[in-house]
Length: 133
Image 1 (spheres, rainbow, N blue to C red):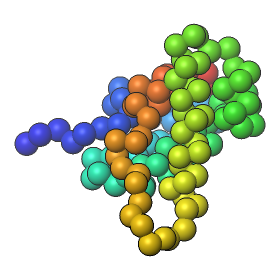
Image 2 (cartoon, rainbow, N blue to C red):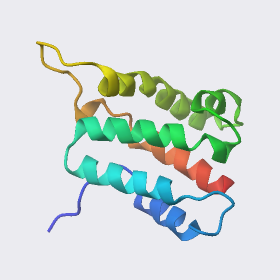
Image 3 (tube, one colour):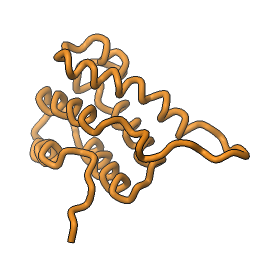
């Protein structure tokens, strides 16, 4: 049997789960969103993955001391590489808005699984968030 495809680094997800109940912030919802993202990624559900990744991006700014992801990207002290990853995730929010808010039309939709940002960007965000908890 082959391993299911994961979007989220399993070690990071495990590390976050191990911190559950030991941090000043409750990480239950974040863990659930990450599990759901992996489940939908494994199933090839592009729209769900876009929506869940957008939810994660909007959920984590308080860990970084900010109210919005845009404020976190612009004001948190990222490494040069992580800043590039975060900028990609911030740019992704427009695409996620397309998935969430574009209404039905006569022509086919163009969003696919290949349109998700590299998993490395989310994993970099999670690494920083875990380190801040």
